[in-house]
Image 1: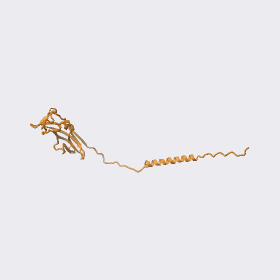
Image 2: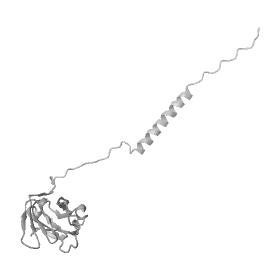
Image 3: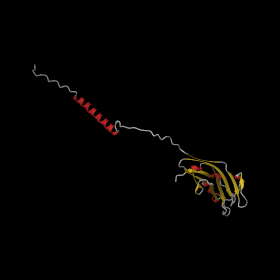
Length: 198
């Protein structure tokens, strides 16, 4: 029988590596969390306060324009002005003056408001031979200040009712048969009211 001793059993592995692995993971998690907090501003609370104004409300003004029922008249080179009840029956000739008396209702409400009242002629009005030989002139008697062609500057003092006069003159100097048998659409003339910016 052999007297040699059996080899000693191999030592049991300790739990240290596992503990070290868990410890390393925890340290990494803390580091990542700290980095995220610093990148996002953290969750620190800072002092703050607020106090509401005691000024009360402020209200908007208004701008509006409406037209009443206008009346037309026609004056030729010869004779006096005649009232016109149906424009579709009128045949104008050079030297004629069509006059519109137009009631307006202007709303201008605002501490600093100013606006421009205009008579604007559309491009289709002047595109033909007849329209290009018609002069359109707006006048507003004792109302606002004329600042340009067919333009009047108004303020809140002008808010309310007014009367505008629009004249359409077939140029007396029209030669040949320019504009003969043609027509223009008077609806291509519009009154506008626009807040002034300069």
